[in-house]
Each structure stands twice: as C-alpha cells, then as structure tokens.
Length: 337
Image (cartoon, rainbow, N blue to C red; front, top):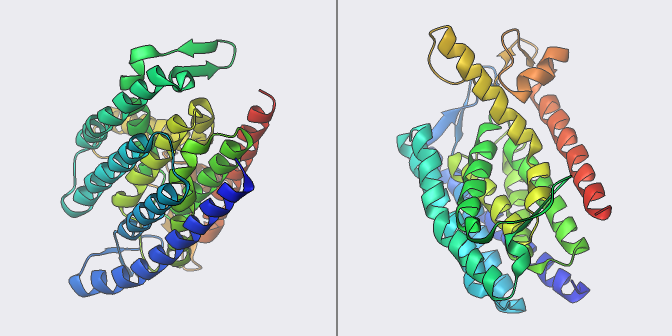
C-alpha cells in the first residue's frame, strides 16, 4: 500500500476520532438526562455510568469509512458498503439488546442472518477477480478452497467474532482497548501484505475506538454497551474476510475465544449444580478497591485474579498485555508465511 494511501487512512482515522469524541460528550449528557445508565460493578457504591457509547463509535465509523472510500476509491465499493451495512445491522441488534435484552440464541441467529448478504457479495467477488477470498490457509492442512461455502463461512465467522468480543467485557476500558489492539495489528498485517480492502473499515474504526477509550478507560465516564461489543467483533471479522486474513483474525481473537470456552464450561457446571445464568467477569471488591475471585474460573478476569488481588485497571492492563503478545505472535506468523 503506497504511503499516500496510508496518509489518507490516517486522515480518515483522525476524522473518526474527532467525530467520536464529540459524539461521546453528547451521549454522556443525553444518557444521564434520560436515565440510560448502568452500575459500575467494580467500584465502591456502584455509581451509575451512561451506557451505549457504541453509538458514537458507529457514527464515527460510518463517516470515516465513507470518506476513505470517497478519497481513495476501490474497484468493489459495493462489497465495502456491504460490510458496513452488516456491521450497522449487528450494531442495531446490540442496541436493541441494551434496551430490551435479547436472548443469547437471538444474538447468534440475527448476526448470522444479517451477514448472509455480505457472504454472498464476497463469494461473487471471489468468482470475479479475487480467488484468494475463498481460500483458507491453515497450518499443516495448507490451502483449503471454500468455494460456495464462503457464503456460510462468512456469517459464521462474523457471528462468532461478534459474540466472543461481547463476552470479554465488564471492566473499564477492557473491550475497547482489546479491540483497538487487535485492529491496530490487523492494520499492520494488512499493510505488510498489501491488502488494501480491509483498511477501509480498520483505519476509521481505530480512530473511533481511540477516542472512545478516552471516555471509557478507568475510571469510565461511559460504557460501550452491546451496541459496541457486538459491532466491533463484526468489524474485525469483516475486515479479516475482506483482507484475506481469516486465520490471522482467528489468532488475534484468541483471548475472546478462550473467554467463550471458559464461560461455556462455567455454564455447564452451573447446569449440573442446578443453577441458572452465565458467569460474569467481575470480582469481589474490597475496601482498598482491589478485586478478588475465590470461586470457579469462568472468565480470563477470574484467571488473572487467581494469581493475586488487583485493582480494576491492573487487570485490564494484564489482559491488554496478553493481547499485545498474541498480536506479536500473529505478525511473526505472517512474516514467516
């Protein structure tokens, strides 16, 4: 990718940053006035914090991506717009869940259905002039040709990524920070492999998330809500498919995948013990503001707290560091391909 195009991407990221920063300030005020707040579970007194900050990120993503497309152009703009439409549809699913509470089954079915048109567009693009889109390169197995199965694999991947990202949340700056780290590594890998198509989503999303973190990092002034966690996973998966980075995307999402399995095993233990509900990511708060966990491990947060009690921001820093190490491993994998 030429440096000129990188500068355009960075400019669009800066626009998205500015839009998100302004929108977050407006959302904080509106959510407080309307009572759209949730308790900060890891703080003494559990103060109410405005929610649905993902709306600001989505607004910034749309503006930044459309601007990037207008300035740089692409041979297949309809595919990028299809990815944007998929992400926004999944964001609406998250918004409805924030307001009305959807079942986990519906949060799996709806993203899959909404992603089917994008899967079909990618399949058509692979048949036209981008055969690499339908090829999956796996260790030991080598190249696997998906063919028409790409129409189903794309929605499945987006659904899994969206729900996995949604599960690893609950601490100030956790989901937003992890997503920003993953997207930064995806940008780097896409640049190294000269895969431009993924960058129309990634650059604006990186700028938007950076601005959102200013308000969401400890102590948070606004929460992301499912509108952000579901849609961020959709952005990462969509960009991975667009940029032919399917396996690399799976590597980068490894902490979220581990979180999914920990929560699923925890759910099975609860069923055996005749208890209901899924486990959460929170710890037990002491008077010094440190989090403890003494029960079953149902989250990466619990696993970190098993070593020693930590303050909330310290747990988040550990998980950010873990994601950075995973990202470096992904870059090393790509360099040695």
